Length: 203
Image 1 (cartoon, rainbow, N blue to C red):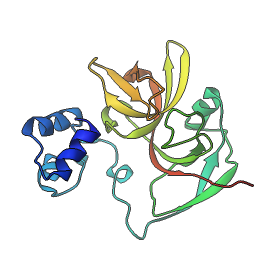
Image 2: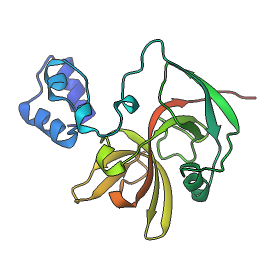
Image 3: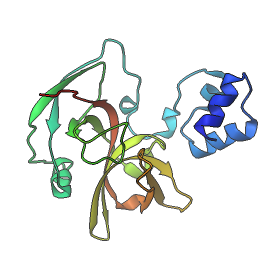
């Protein structure tokens, strides 16, 4: 269902058909049907996510994050090292983002695949995901390091379910970039994007 059609129905006080709701639940199995239909409970079915619930929990009003390490890495080799268990990468600075919790670090965005939502030079705060195959929340934005047949990629994309078993779609926000698919097994590192920061300075 397109955003325009959804907005039109809400504007005209029309209901959303059962078929469309079923399609939403089919495309996003981690969404809680009770929340979608009645607005009750949590949006996500945390029981279906094997990752520690803390990664996806709501940020409490009193939560603060100080000294988030910021990395400026431009090569896939550097990304692979950053996400390794014993990384040799050193942060170039530290960032304080209020009302955020459960983070591993922050990275400068490279490229325009998520423009205008994100642009090159923005900073994204991330939380690394363990046990990737069982813990993807479809529709969320991720940083992904991929090694597919010795071809390495580092992408910032929305992850969507593919019609091909064992594959994931990597969808850009910028429509000039095509959606690509890779085997889930080729995703060597995955990190949930939890926040973004843009510095609008002319100096």
